[in-house]
Amino acid sequence: MTQTVAVPLWVFVLMCALVLLAVLQWLLLPGARWYFRRKVRGVLDEISVRLKIELPQFKLTRRRALIDRLMIDPRVLAAAEAHAATTGQPRAVVMKTIAVYAREIVPAFNAYVYFRVGYWLSKTFARFVYRVRLGYTDVQAMAAINPKSTVVFVMNHRSNMDYILVSFLAAERVALSYAVGEWARIWPLQGLIRAMGAYFVRRNSGDPLYRMVLQRYVQMATEGGVPQAMYPEGGLTVDGRLREPKLGLLDYMLKGFSPDGERDLVFIPVGINYDRVIEDRTLLRKLDAKPQRSGLLRTLRITGSYLARQFVFTLLGRRYRFGYACVNFGKPYSMRAFVKERGIDFRALDDADRRTQVAAVGQALMAQIGLNVPVLPVPLVASVFLSDPQRAWSELELKAAVHGLIERVEALGAHVYVPRTDRDYALTVGLRMLTLRHLVIEEQGLFRVNAAEMTVVAYYANSIAHLTSQTTK
Image (cartoon, rainbow, N blue to C red; front, side, top):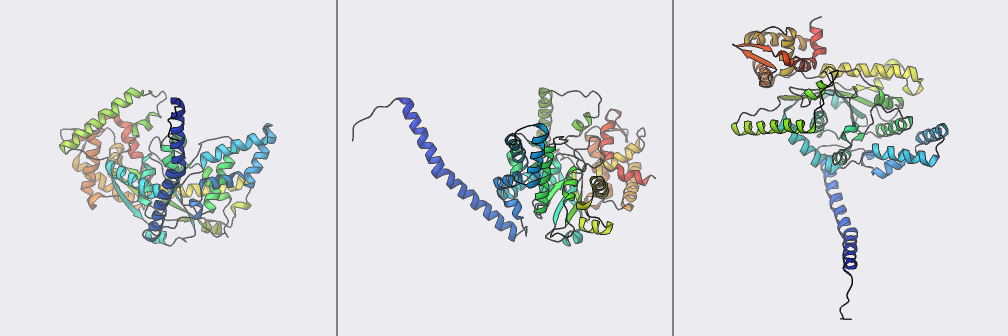
């Protein structure tokens, strides 16, 4: 019993590996699961008491159960049968494809990641880059929403910062589920986004099988009362203007809406704007007929140079954030009231009539989003410069023009964010940002647009062009 036994080194290494695997599987992993479940339960208790947020059961359902539910959905199975009959593929192969689509779409919401990790990261990064402001909110209308309603935030899409900004500002009211494009399906970002409750969408996919799986997930989440956020424009604005709405996700939500059901479907228009969009030049490059491709080394060099300058400016006390980032929450738009007013039922309409009614909803929502886009200092000053691009303005002339423009857009019902409630300071902030970026040049006390940067100035003026154009009619 006490004799030494010699074994080959590879056998000893294998035995050690098996022991470590057993310890990991039977001791460490269960302990880790228990620890994180305890953390999640603590977060759920806190948000239900302190923040009064009631997470819908659908959002807390295990991801595996949602995937299974999606795969055995009668409409998905019918689409699988039709696809198999049309293409000649075996049904088992079609179901494997559906499983891939379901796993790709369905999120894995984690309350701890959302309210602890995600909220902290969003708040820290947003405040580091911008002076974040919550502008207008229709408090009374928001409070009047039936708690059983499914709430969908619909917003304009100016920057990838939109996700971070709105999640951070809305986190004390609701846990949002975003429709996210394929750009975010990269490691390790993909796992974090899933844990935040977002679901991935293949834009412009022509695969009817994929569209059915996506449609049924969106409808299941809507019927389950999951608060969602979507961009009717379908993607980032390239020139700064509001885009026409794309109706895919909106159609999915509305085609199964029951006016007499337990839940109303309420859309909340959200307007977002920035004094500076991080990716403005990248977006504008897409307007070029033959855009220059920026290599990795050039991109790294530009990024490194910018970070180095910001570090030096911070040390010298001369660093300015990217101006203001502001979000407005407008008046809720009830689908129950909409169908009652028009005497329609989306479920009873044929495809053509339903699309017509969905388009009407989309246009109405975009109009409300446009009205709620915050009017910030840089877009204000840029709009004045763009009204007469060749002119050289004195500061006094700019002040008079900006004040006049503020009064005209406010008369339309738009929401102007005036920092410190000081219009002169708003001009100072907007002009400073434009001159620091060399978009506007100062010569002998007069200011004019840098002709080489005219498209960038227009990009910021375009963010409120739907408002300023009405003031000139």
